[in-house]
Amino acid sequence: MSLGLPSTSRDSVMRAIARREKRQTRLRWRLFVVLFAGVVVLDQITKTIIRSTLEPGGHVEVFPGFDISRVTNDGIAFGLFPGRQTAVAVLTVVALSAIAIALAGMVRRNATVAAGAGLLVGGSVGNLLDRLVRGGVTDFLDPVRWPAFNIADMAIVVGAAAIVIGLTKDVGDDDHGS
Image 1 (cartoon, rainbow, N blue to C red):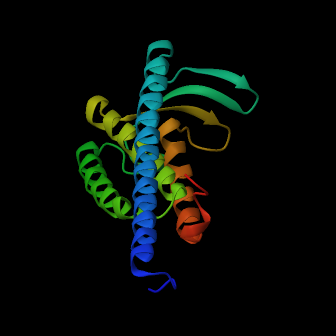
Image 2: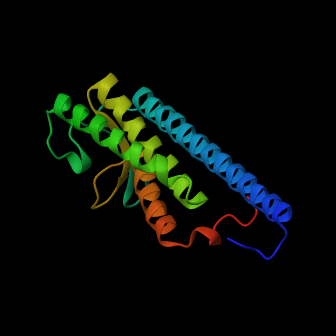
């Protein structure tokens, strides 16, 4: 690639570009780690509060059509495959491992993908911790006509959407100096 500059100037420009890309990649990984850890911590704190304040099956109406309820989901999304915790936990670990490997290469693409990956992996780990430690996931956000869910579930959905958005945008359009 020739920039029309003398060799030493071209080398300097290429080194500067490489340093910028390395700096942006480090920032994206930090974003991933912060969101991952934040989701796991917030998810576990909210579930602990729910378990300590509501009896199983208990609920408090926040406003008409939305309750805080203590629900234990011993299946996967929307309560599918109940009572199969070992199989669900093994499948979750396998899927999470595959997703983490795939996302590791994508985090470099842009900050939107890095943020989405942090949310998705953090939410997955938050729910996996519940499965392994408690035998089921504690759900508590309970809107009318929709199954109860939790912070981890929200992070997974928002994270997946962010990854899709991030993968569909041009790499150069993202960071604007970050």
